[in-house]
Image (cartoon, rainbow, N blue to C red; front, side, top):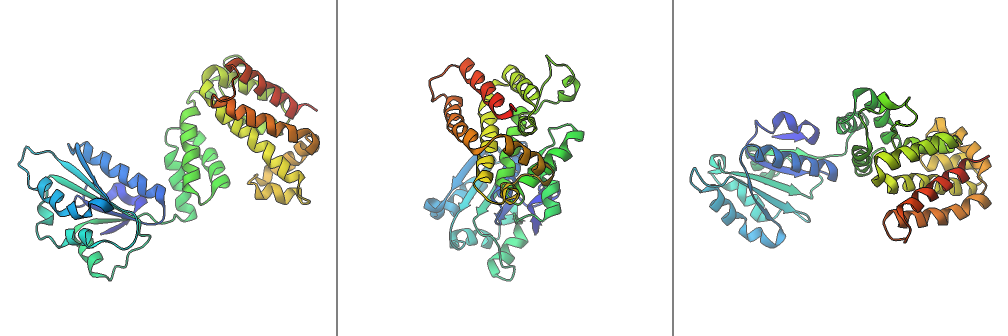
Length: 328
């Protein structure tokens, strides 16, 4: 049986304990793999064996040894990595075994580099009859939106849509970049953010708000965000540097192009923010902003502990950078 990676939850507990992952989306493939492993770990499959190209000759022996144990034997997940070329005969041979459906002590998980499979071929037909084939293909636009919203399930519902739209606008079609954004949000998102946003001293902010306040030339608000994040999540310093650095690079690129609007569009700036960005660029001339590129590089090193300055100096330099970028 073949199912899409996004539908795996419907079939994972109903299918044979043999899975074949293929398709072009690496993120979906990795997520499906992790989901399968975690599902069967809860069912007592604690042992794990990984076989790659160098150990293909051991596939049959490893399966027989693990499947042929007693009732008290370890339940084992056997992960087979196929990362290049055609499907090797050792993997195809698995599905020629007449006892395939009787293997209760093992889960076989084959993670393949194939982007597609031909359903008319014999080995695919044999596999289709005995395993769940999981197609990790590129998502359509509506599927991508639903997928990213599902990745943001750690947020309050009222925040999900805006964050999902922002991530898709920035990284449409790139699930790796979208996943990186989600992982950053997991580290920085505060569920009680809205409850505290009117409390000036105790307010908590998301790092991504900083970018908006900088291009809006809102110095005080931007400094409040820096102060809040320093107090509540000092480990986000590198993320703040990245946000500021992106603004500087986008502005420099726009200055160096005749069509500034087109440059901003190519840099991924939202259409509704382009007029604000253009005003920001007017204030921050190329002569003014070029030296800041060197400063942000030094702050990037400092955030990684490579610049030889104290934490207090790092945060002070961030404040100075904000003031320079937003002062009229």
